[in-house]
Image (cartoon, rainbow, N blue to C red; front, side, top):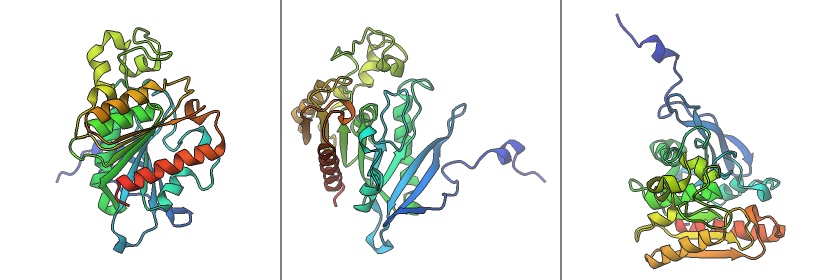
Length: 295
């Protein structure tokens, strides 16, 4: 009599079939599932996501999805962090989104010290596919997905929105994300092998032009892309404002609905503007996400 090999018995269940953790109620009408594995690459840490689910009834049907991608220069960051200006909010930003009828998934991805591009984009795409596979259990409708990212996460979110073919997205909310890894903008130069962009690509962008182009949302624009909302401060000292302006112009030229909202006086992470302005940015972004998802 034979059965599974010992190595198979020892291994953790594959994320596609592993039991989901129990949900906890952390805010009125919102359920949370934390640390849900969605991908296990050999030799890499398990990649996890956190979920905020609206407390809707089964009769309401599955909820549309916000897929959130965190920032951190592709070097660091936490999946459940929307940026320094939202960390003190109670309820937090993701609970607030879920309270308005959208499920939220905040995802890990491999950082540049772990794997070079396109690994982080592959991870975000895998998270979307996992959410599709487990959507009926979770009550999530990934056919109405809006990707939302900030800084480096905005870069990956833009790429996902522009390159996902199996399950096209409904919209993209991009906060101060890099759009071009091929040309000098602000403090960035493609010849420097020590920039976060170079660490992401595994080499100075100028020395790997095809990879830099593949990693540039500006180079991936096409007429069938989903609607974009790009929000960027005009005083950003870390990601130059023209990154968003150029991407918005290219999307518009291709016939894609794209709105560029420039926030006066805002540095990276909304540093330098009043709390009320950050609230206004968040609220307008949430309204865009709800509208794109059909709510």
